[in-house]
Amino acid sequence: MRIAIFSEPAQEPRVSASVETVKRLVGLGGEVLVASGAGLGSGISDADYQGAGASIAADNAAASSGAQIVLGVRRPAAADLAGIAPGALVIAIADPHGNEAALAEVAATGASLFAMELMPRITRAQVMDVLSSQANLAGYRAVVDAAAEFGRAFPMMMTAAGTVPAARVFVMGAGVAGLQAVATARRLGAVVSATDVRPAAKEQVESLGGKFIAVEDEEFKQAETAGGYAKQMSAEYQAKQAALVASHIAKQDIVITTALIPGRPAPKLVSAEMVASMKAGSVLVDLAVERGGNVAGAVAGEVVTTANGVKIVGFLNVPGRLAATASQLYAKNLYAFVETLVDKNAKALAVKWDDELVKATLLTKSGAIVHPGFGGKVEDAGAPAAA
Ligand code: NAD
Image 1 (cartoon, rainbow, N blue to C red):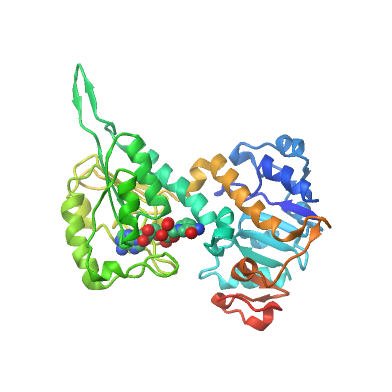
Image 2: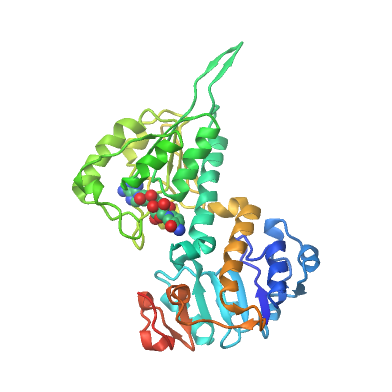
C-alpha cells in the first residue's frame, strides 16, 4: 500500500503528514513516499520524515507513481495529475465549490478524490473535522495578528508611569474560529464582546467570559439549521443587526469577523460608515475575506489603512500562518480518515463505498464526478452517494 505525501504550491506552507502520522501510516502497512521538501514550510525536514520511516521522492510525480493513496492539503494541481494512477484515492481540502472544471480534470485521471471539508460533523468524524481544526487556529491567529497591528496593549496595566486601559475586542461570528478568538483575546486581558445569529452561541460566548450582543428576536430563535450552521438572515434582520452593531463598533479597538453561511458569500456585517466611526489605530481582522469578506474595504491578502487611520487586515490562509501546528492537526485529521479506508489485519485498502463518511466526501470516481452536490449522478458512484 503505497502512500504519497504531496508537496504543496508556494502559497501553501502546510503539509498533509507529520512525523507522527508517517509513523502511524507505516504501522498501517503503508510504504510512505514524501515529495522532497514537502514539510519545510511546517518545519519538517526530509530527514525527519525518513526517521519516521518514509522514503523521499524527487517530486510529486515520483511520489505518486504507483501510489494507492495520495495525501495533500490542496487539491492536486493540473501539472501533478499525470502521475496519479486510476483508482488511486486522493484526499485533500478539495475546494469543489465553483471548481467543477478542475474536478472534471481530476475525475479524468480515474482517481477517487475525497474532500475533507465535506466530512459530516458527526461524533465519529470529529477527529477528521478539518474545518474545526483549522478554524480554531485561524481564530487564535486573528487575535495575535490584531495585537501585532495594534499600537496599544491588550491588557489593563497599572504602572508607575500611568494606567493603560484594556483593549476592547468585538468578535462577529461565534463559531469555531470566533469562540477561539474570544478565548484568546480574554487570555490577553481584553474586554471582549461577541455576536452571532445562532442562539446557541450566547451561552458559549458567556462561558468564555465574553459579553453577548445580538438582536434576539423571533428570527434569531430560528436561525440555526439542523446541521448547526447559520441561515441567511432576512434584510429586515440585517438592518436591525446593523443598527445594534453600529453603535457598539464605534467604541471598539479591535473587531474580528468570522461570519460564514455554508455555500453562500460571507454576510456583509461591517459597513464603510462603521469603519469610519472607529478611532484611529483601531484594527479589524476579516477572517471571511476569502469568501468575499464581512468588512467593507477588506482586500484579500493585504493590510489596508483607511483615511481615518483604521487598519483592515485581510490575510489569506490564516491557518497557514501557524503552519507547523496547522499541519500537525490536519495530518491527524487525514490519518484518522485513512484508517477507516484500510483493513488493518490485511494491511491493504478496503474502502467501504457505502460508509456515510465516504459518501459525503467522495467527489470523483472511475472517471466521473459522482457527488450529487457538484453535478454527479448517484449511479456513477457505484454506490449511493449522500446528498
Ligand atoms: P461557520 O464557519 O459556518 O460560520 C462562523 C459563524 O458565523 C457561525 O457561528 C455562524 O452562526 C456565524 N454567522 C453567520 N452569519 C452571521 C451573521 N449575519 N451575523 C453574525 N454571525 C453570523 O461556522 P462553524 O465555525 O463551522 O460552526 C458552525 C456550527 O457547527 C457551530 O454551531 C459549531 O459549534 C458547530 N460545530 C459542530 C461540530 C461537531 O459537532 N462535530 C464541529 C464543529 C462545529
